[in-house]
Length: 235
Image 1 (cartoon, rainbow, N blue to C red):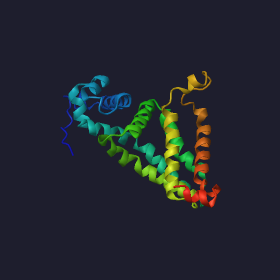
Image 2 (cartoon, helix red, strand yellow):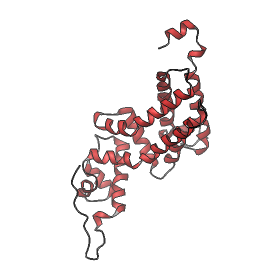
Image 3 (cartoon, one colour):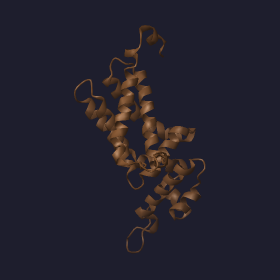
Image 4 (cartoon, rainbow, N blue to C red):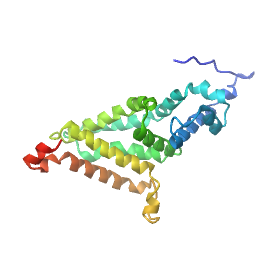
């Protein structure tokens, strides 16, 4: 753990400028924005400081290295992941096997609420980028923050479809994640719909949930609809 200097105070006993919470938050938001736009490797601490409007040394004072700052962004949003896991737990605590739609809502709705927040756009884009192009330096945060959620969702899908293999549930999770990430990061739907749809329109949430649920149900029951020979040929 890195050493941190004691907070400086002015003669009146108030925190010095370096300790102002708005400056610390500004650094985190600036890093989130630049990492989302350019990727981890293409951003420097100097650029983050300039974006945040703070002295260069203040970034290291609050967050340490660039890797630690990157980690802090995901730690900041961890409650959203925890909410999704908690909601999945509530579904699994009910009737068995659990219904699919509550599982999908637990997976999707907290993300849509996050995306609708003031800074949610940058985080959504950052998550999409890192899940698609994760490098060794960023893989640690994905394993720490997202793998537990992935396993919880896969286990919930397996519980909802006990005749299917857990491997089938892992594929279903992967496909569902792709639909969700594309929805929260896409900015083309307005153009493709000839300006009839708006990106991240809350009214689209029921359609997204229905789409993901239908896809999962079809994928998880695919083996049941195959002939014995086809089932043997399906990996």
